[in-house]
Image (cartoon, rainbow, N blue to C red; front, side, top):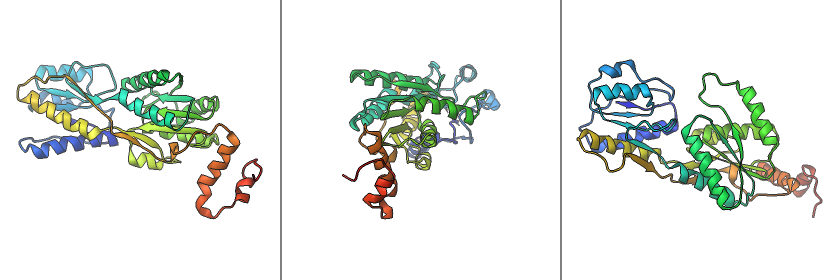
Length: 304
C-alpha cells in the first residue's frame, strides 16, 4: 500500500519513481488512495493483510499499528523526528548549498531565509543555509511563516507579518524560501511592497513545482529535488525488506539535481536602488518598443 499524497508535485513525483520500479518488477500489486499530506492513516490499515507499506504520513500511531502487523515499512516522512523505520529523504544540506551558491554567484552579500516552524525538513534547511553562508562570512535574516497548521492565522495576517519583515531587509537581498509554496508567498509580498524582483530581492525556492513556479510573478527559481529518484529508491528498499533482507543503511539520502533558474534570480545584484528600478522597468517592458526616454520617465536618472 502507498500512503503518499497525490495533492503535491513532490508526492506525485515520488509515486512516479515507485511506479517506474514496479514496471520493472511485475510481481507487485499496488493499492493507492488519493490523499493530501495531512490525511490520517486509513482505519482499515490495522486489518490489512499485505506485504509492505511506503508511507509519507508516518505518525507514532501508524508506527504502532504496523509494528503489530509485522509488515515492512519504508518511511518517506521528513516532517518530524525519526520514526525508527527505514527512511528515504532529500539531502537538505546539498539543497541549501545549491541555493546559497546560486545567490552568492549573483553577487548577493545580504541574505534572508523564510521557513516553516515545527517542520524538520525546514529546520534542517535553515541550519544548513546559515552554516554555508557562515563559511563566506555572511549572516542570515530569518522569518518563520505558517504552513499546514489547523490553527494558522489568515493569509492577510501572515502577509502583513511577512511584509514587515521584508521592509526591514537591507537591499539588495537574496532570499531562500524553504519550498516553492513559501517562495510564492514571498514573491507576492515583494510585489505588494513594490520591490524590484530580482534586482532588489532575489528569491529561490525548493521542489521545482513547475506550475507553482510559473504562477509566481516573476517566475520562481527553484532547487530541483529528485523526488522520483527517492520514490524509486524507497521501492527498492521495500523490496529488500519484503525479501527478508536487511539493508546496509537504514537512512537513504537522495541528492537534488540542481537549480532551475527563472526570472526571480536571473540578475546580478545591484546596490543602487535607482539603477535597480531602471533595470526592472527595462526587464518588464523590453519587448514593447521602449526607448531611453521611456526609461528616464520611470527612473530618477540622467540620460548619460
